Image (tube, rainbow, N blue to C red; front, side, top):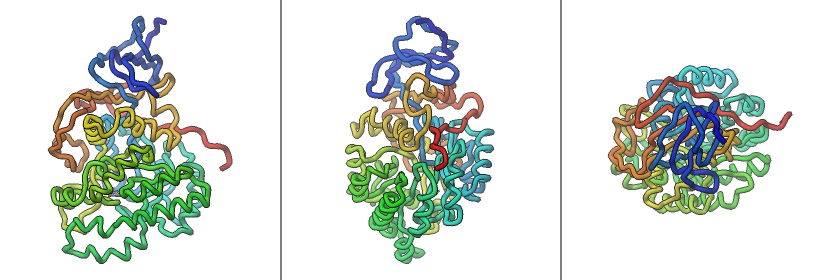
Length: 446
Ligand code: DOR
């Protein structure tokens, strides 16, 4: 059939649901309009993708972009610019800004800011608290809301829901899957004295130990079952939690991060010092192997970057004054493609965890696969390109990456969002036109 499209990606190897084939992909009005050998098709713009892989747009479902309040670390312009430079087409942003996104007006404010300056598509989490537990169920229905986030343990910012009674109220009051940071606050407090001034940063995973994570994850699963609410356990760091979560597929989905899959203690603390400090912590090689096991077994559903930028100056402070978190939205794709090229996971599994996975976990509408009628979001990569990740490539305001100096094989060459090329060969194109991510409608009256 001879049809006219806005854009055709010609001659690439395309990762479709269930098969990877040489094909052309066309887009019209921001949506995928045709897939196949589009011999007679016409388009305003045809892009030669020979030698490249065309993936569904990568969705990074955990980033901290710091606006409002902490814009010296990051803002919605710099964070989303970093995203598209790294091949990411949509982000879900966490609520621990200043003030926190813990009410409807704060959510509206973030959406208005993003409408003016986001380079990629976006949704925002609402932060749960004991005070807003009863209102979250109504607010999470708002367009552009990714759902509710619970911090069971204190991390950056003031958000915290540590008591079972309050967690139960948050879980009982809504419908969508709740994203949870699982560290047990009581145990963190009990053990805090281990890391008084002068303690080395290598103590970070001793203070925030395996039991701290395991205890919170077990509590969460029990509360999710009790209330009948789905949960998504963020940034798993222990082999033990993977085994626990294998038995919790009825209520829980699972996220892993590139940092926890790539770095390990003690080397990361010897090499990077407090720049390797994050919550929950990077642990030893046994746990890293446990995370890869969870990925291979299909227990892990999603890879999120947990992009959590702090400035060089802030991170250079002595532990434990140094803040926790590392940037990652721009390095997620190259770091994970490097694992693909090393044979640690298949390209299809990468796509499963960065496109289909977030779509399934969060019930995203019209994104997550290359299929007719879906948004024309593509991450076009060169699996053969060898490049060095360096701090000067990083667009985040923080200006550094824990992967500085790492040579990777596999690189994002183009980022295309709803049929518009926004990044090609390392150059940001056009102007910010990111839109709120759409979700499937919720049943009425829940
Ligand atoms: O290391 C972390 N940094 N973990 C979190 O949970 C929050 C994040 C941040 O926002 O800095």
